[in-house]
Length: 249
Image 1 (cartoon, one colour):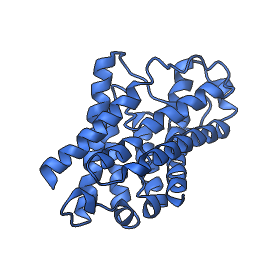
Image 2 (tube, helix red, strand yellow):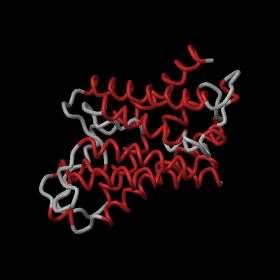
Image 3 (cartoon, helix red, strand yellow):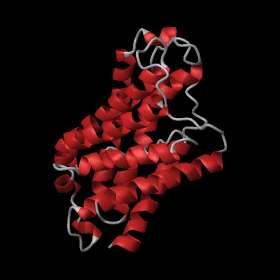
Image 4 (cartoon, helix red, strand yellow):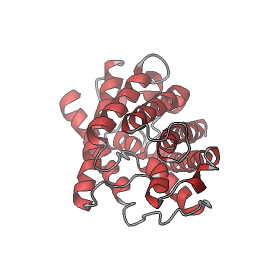
């Protein structure tokens, strides 16, 4: 249960700080209004680093179903724990999104535009083209999982995937910060087309929050698009993990 609670807490921190960065840029009368994409990407990277530092020693800080499923697919994580991790991650993301809503409570009414309010919670494409959007999410998440495994492998001698122990690697040192920088790089380089969900829980939990919360003029939660940031990252996570095994182990 401690691992599941850690995944809940880590994903909550991720969304609180990550969606919080988006809110400060997009919501009217925020002191950070209009500060731009770089603030958002750096905010998400720091959110990942703090989340990993917070719970890495306990659960390995997957904080992302794509990471959990990708690791399980190569034998680096037990399938028996996948469902518990995923449920904890989605619940943590939902809770983190609610906290962002509370933190910016007066600003929702001041903000015009349904798209801006939805973007605080979840991702959406710059150009809606489902096959292309899916490919972007696959590529971005494959880079994420490949990079996480590379960072971990550099800190640990691995003979086979089953030797990987993220709780040992991400409990101390610079590795969590490196993962955060990896997320910044992905956001700057690959985030433009879809807003780089690269994490099904990061998108689904806050999208549920958007649907449930009483937000003035919020509009649709865009469920027609919601499958892309779920399926794309899962496929990319598995692909990135297997690519690392193919060339790195």
